Amino acid sequence: MIIHQDKDRLKTLLPTISDFLQSHLHLTLHPKKIYLPHYSKGIRFLGVFIKPHRIYIGNRTKGNFYAAIQKQNYIVKQKKPDAAALSHFLSSINSYLGILKHYKTYDLRKRMLFKNLSAWWCNYIYLSGGIAKFVLKRKSTKR
Image (spheres, rainbow, N blue to C red):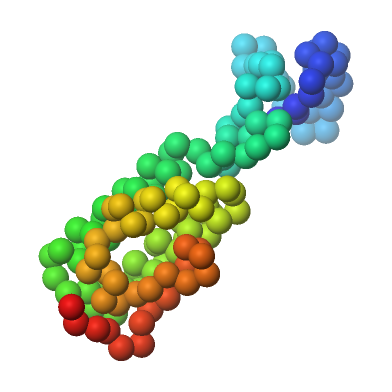
């Protein structure tokens, strides 16, 4: 992806890029797959939506995070989680929290967890570092 404010500048780069790809990598650009939108519309890249002065988390990533929370809630409703289930919970949810903390998503993380995560998990884990990571409790409490 090449992003520039001037669409004409991008059009002048196309022959140079095409020549480089052909001579060094033996690749060709598909003529119908060259898309030159205005830079202010932003682009999707690696699970985020990049605009000129802000990076948003992608809707797909938010949806997957919600689905992971629902899956963990289903597990805890079926039975008391064992060590493997707790380990899986920590790795899954902390993975999403690790991705999300790189963007301005504090309110999103807070809303998703407090609104959707089952309260039963509070017997086994607690939040650490400003809604950035779940940590396993040493001794579970009964409520």
